[in-house]
Image (cartoon, rainbow, N blue to C red; front, side):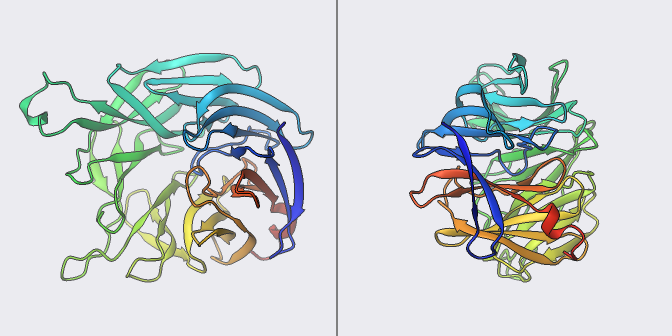
Length: 371
């Protein structure tokens, strides 16, 4: 039975509410995808997961009463996002479907052709009207000769959450050995703009951050990564997330980048300005609060991960906790916020290497106290 307990972090003395099941793995959504319902009380978690396939059950959990409602079974972690009106959107191969988080009713939003496969994470505008998606399209033998050198295209697109209309936005077609375009995210306030990443070994990707105009298909690199005169890349970046006001993207320059400082950065939506936010720790992922006041980041360290709160205005950081970390999906902490910006959510390992969801209420400790 999924249940909640609480304990005090040994490093900071701060309380942590945990959700989990003994002997089983439980995790929340990917850090760019909302995992809470609009009341910031009920959270969507993935539990009873198989460690090899990441398949398990998606449930609605009441953090005040411990009530559990199963919404789906045998589903793969990492494919969901919760909308402002408490609809859980999920992917299954070529299908995008929705589950009402209260009533449990399921409906298909759209289906791609059989040779196409959706991949997560999903993204959605703040008003819940447009989803940002991407998919892999296996190329058919009959297609034009220019496609013969490729086995598949990676396609960036949008889906209207009401009508189910699918609109292809871009086919980036990056060169081998790193042809993948992924992590597509719709601008939260402007469905006319989408982000996507050039995926691959970060030490080899000189153009990670891209945006596309969904009306015209115009694409451009948003952040010019530094190169030495020899041509060697010295900025390794990734794990991007839109600010909720759509003003730009937060991302990480990873700790092993030769160019310093490393840490959390912000680039505006036009790519005209970027700024360094904080590099106090060896950051890994960074989530942003809906009110824009805070970022929360985890760290990549051997066997553990720190969860760190950052004030986006003062750029000060504060350690929230330090907990065991499996270091492999879906066991990354992936810290994120509740809709009211008062709760930080993350995944961690217990002493038996089983995953649990941790929740920390930051409102009473930090708001109004300088951070």
